[in-house]
Length: 492
Image (cartoon, rainbow, N blue to C red; front, side, top):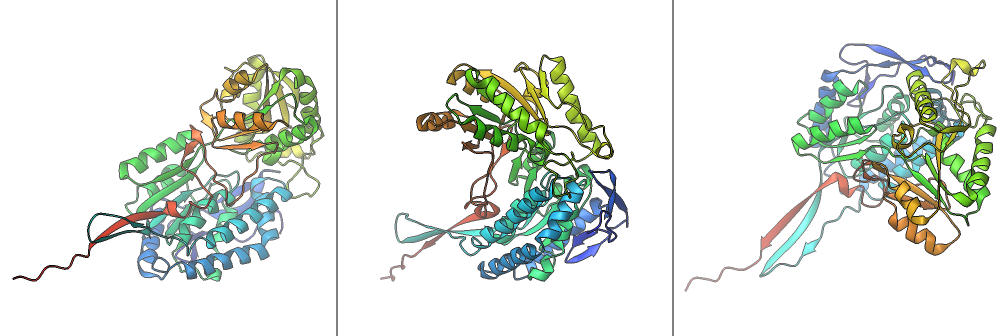
């Protein structure tokens, strides 16, 4: 695959590719060079409405929804197999479009394959229940698909975070319309092309690219939309929640984090430093659950910060497509400026930049959106860079003297997505995990998740969960049925 892709990436509606109602295309960039990478169709509100109309028709007329789950399981399993055979192609596409290293991209596509396999296994296990009620009655529940579900995906894990919602919705028998991020739509469009090959009926999976304000809002407000999942910023998430509430439809929202990593004095500092570096510099820090706040006991503060700073300084930056690169670029020039602005604000508010703190100015990387892995120590808890999500390779460091102080600092933001604890003491691990305001806690490990483990947060980090054994049921509605079994007495 060359660095410039000749074939245009069009919308996928009803099993066919289309340039959209207006025939418009726009370039997407390679963030390692900011050169044009591919031409992508630009959808509008009428394309969104068309996709919803086609999805509703497919939901009502195809075999997909009435199936007992067996054929859906086979189709999703076949889709997983097709994607696995083309893993390298999709990984390279993800790397060129988003910037992450090829190793990270391979891991992402592998996670998508495993997600499809996992939810395929749940497709024929959607069960109701019987309920004891008084008298000669039978009471039971059934689970039914919702209808057409809408999924609005972010740019940082373009395919993974899209399919994390789409796959269980399809497994439950719904039709889906996916709007990928305009910056990074290529892997989602390529994935949409695979549906027909896997035996999924036309119209069950549709991909529409376009702006959030036009296409995104058109999808959510369409009367055929029965559920929406969104991953992205709090501001946009709140708007989607408002629109969903007006229509009384369920919304799953994953809105970011400012995740604390709490290191106690008995921790293995070498191991912790490696995990901390991975948790903030992986994907160039462009992760909702990045371990972006290091809270370290004062007695080991200097030793740990030195270790983490060495990892940061030694990280090899370069285009993600090059095998030796250990961190790729940020996704866009605008995002690069945003990250740099946070670091400058941290400096102005009293933070000390231990390492990094600047974009790469040397050729050839200067043409891309490269920012050096950065460690900032000692900024006050009120600093903007401490309170807000930076979404870049920037680690904010604080020390603590007691467990109570560590918990207060850890829970002292509006977010509650992820937290990590490093300690050798079992009691400390359990008690600290219990007190942390986070939907996920890792102990002695960098951020890690699996298709079978729930992913979601507390407070401003969102609403609802993705992944896990309950995720398919979340895309169903429960109906209660009661039958009077009493036989009427014959008249005298």
